[in-house]
Image (tube, rainbow, N blue to C red; front, side, top):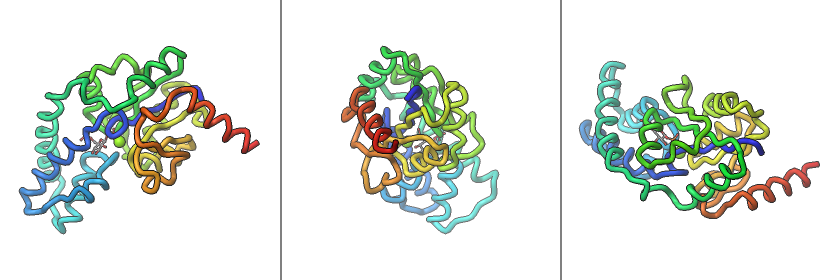
Amino acid sequence: MKAFIFDLDGVIVDTAKYHYLAWKRLAKEFDFELSELDNERLKGVSRIDSLDIILRLAGKQMDQAKKHELADKKNTWFLEYVNNMTPAEILPGSVNLLEELKTASFTIALASSSKNARTILNKIQLTDYFDVIVDGTMITHSKPHPEIFIKAARLAGVPANECLVFEDAEAGVEAAVHARMRCVGIGNPDRLHKAFIAVSDLSRLNLQKIQSLFQHADTVKS
Ligand code: B16
Ligand code: MG
């Protein structure tokens, strides 16, 4: 492995809870109660695609202008939460692993569907760890399309088979697999069965564990 590509929401920081609060508030405006289970389907998916999913669940239709108005409204509420974020919200194990990778001079990339990824990284003071950042403003297709990971690898100058992705969303794991990259799922192994392996959070891993895991897999393969 030469490059390590991190998703943001659900891997490094739990902004999903803020997305959920903002979407729930918006859905109430058209009398729809958004459940936590429904919210799972929005993870890793772009803002406008998330709204489409909610509207489908609610059985509502609206024109593009109205959709953009609602998506902007949701984003304003989401940013109010983001504004209050601090480094205390970084998920367990993230800083240790980033620190280890940096010390060993590996390329570190971020591949987040969020258009707010840079703002969030600045808030939690992790921006300097990343050699490459691809966010929602730089892609045309949302995960599960592989575009975001392919772009991150290209900017890092590393071939796909030498990249390892960390992802919490099913759509994200699928995108990494489509990009022909290996992927460590962060979360429930049943939900993330397409990943090479799944762990509950990054504190379960360190560089040595990752290297032996993949060396063993390569030995078995050859
Ligand atoms: P924004 P990730 C994703 O971030 C979130 O998981 C997803 O729920 C959200 O809709 C998407 O970013 C877009 O976010 O509205 O801020 O542009 O998991 O790819 O880091
Ligand atoms: Mg995510």
